[in-house]
Image (cartoon, rainbow over all chains, first blue to last red; front, top):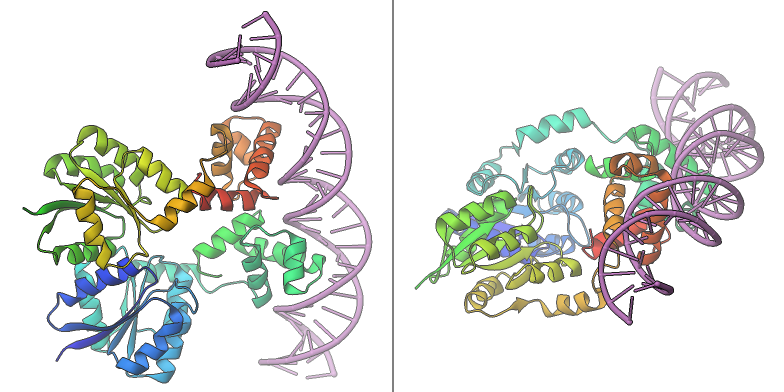
Length: 202
Length: 202
DNA sequence: CCACCCTCCTGACATTTGTCACCCCCGGGA
DNA sequence: TCCCGGGGGTGACAAATGTCAGGAGGGTGG
């Protein structure tokens, strides 16, 4: 009995290449491919795959939100996250959203098929290196507002621009930023953005 | 007669997947795979591939420098850049370095094999969308020093930190930054970094 | 009920950042 | 030769940023 797969990745070339790679395995079959998070749910409902391989960074809905949707609407479909960045926060949030596995694109190609089979068998698959990183990094220390403000600061916006976008006072934005800078151990807005991104807190 | 290929990409999974994809074509054969720019030249000299597929973003030497090396040491090996980001500056610099083709990872998987064959036949392969972007974006307006200073500012360093790193005076760093901000049309250091990165000027 | 945290705001303050004018030196064209 | 652009620098100034103290409301848990 073959394992039926859904592939979701925004880069068409990577998607097709993964399809070719997995298609070489006699017990695996790619039944659907999508290029954005928004299409995942519909494709799952249409094709009832056994395992869905989702990227985290995608246009529209991200892979983690898509995971939650899939778990809710189609509990029989297991989710394996396949992503570029081993951000500790991604792993934590993916597992909380109900993902069964988490693989970074650095892992050898030969291991992917195994990971798929393990996930299909009901096991958890997690990069051990990443798991420890996730422990030390812990959950995001940022409050909801601080996260929002930092996100708005990512593109280099000024305090005034952020305040306008979030309907806040200038001073409030500065306070939230200052707090976020302190919590991330940065001395700087830009540094805070970088470390928060690196930990998957944004 | 089969076309012999070299694959260079830092993500093992993508590398293996591309290998599987291209391996499906009867006239193509992957003879070597490497995971960093530093290994490219040695692999080219050892295996004499007809076409080398190089990523731009790699640990160690980047794909563009690797392209120049390959062209110098093994002129018979043609280079096809396969990269995530369609930065205009990347395209320009890749072609100047002697690349025969430039493909972004958004392109459909089916077109990759064709691109390889075209490159092998001596043709140029360039994403037309990207080519026009490259024209409007033009060459980097930044001087060598301005570029250096902006690069040093990428991680959110303060003026003082940049000055120490580059053995410059604080005021000089501020002048270079101000000039770079003006040339990029930004109002801000962070914005300047972002637009310069987006254009492949860093 | 109280304590605690988050949110939102104000005002003040020191520091950093961005800008401008102006200086010098050097090397390559016109 | 003069002129111009790039690199390096100084000094001064306005604006933006980061920090701190403090106040007011709201929600949650002990």
